[in-house]
Image (cartoon, rainbow, N blue to C red; front, side, top):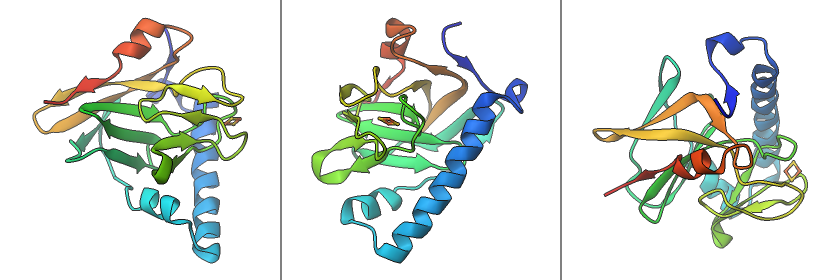
Length: 170
Ligand code: FES
């Protein structure tokens, strides 16, 4: 299997520690934004928070009605609907795990740490990162998108699997 194994067997592993770090970082960032006043793009991003329904190694979300991004902080997942296709990304930047931001006016993701930029489908544009956003496999179950959290797919480790980690919405 190409990718990082996650789930119950991962308790206490580096990825779990990373998720805890990201949750702490997001909590601090949210507090700072409340105090300073968030720019409109970040405020719009924050209103896209979602809570997924976890079942085993999967988490499910209602299919978004329109293009946009939503974040599930509990599971560190970014859910995107973009031009008829759905994607699920890890929230952290593939360079050094900083939580990513959605820049509404530019319709792209940007890392606040070293400014790597990514298109809505996770394609790397520029910056210090060396690959696109890490993706989870996604499937459809009636009116929901099911994200398989068991394996995180890195573009450089297996480009064909990474490319296939998306869902065409009709
Ligand atoms: S941590 Fe995101 S570009 Fe370095």
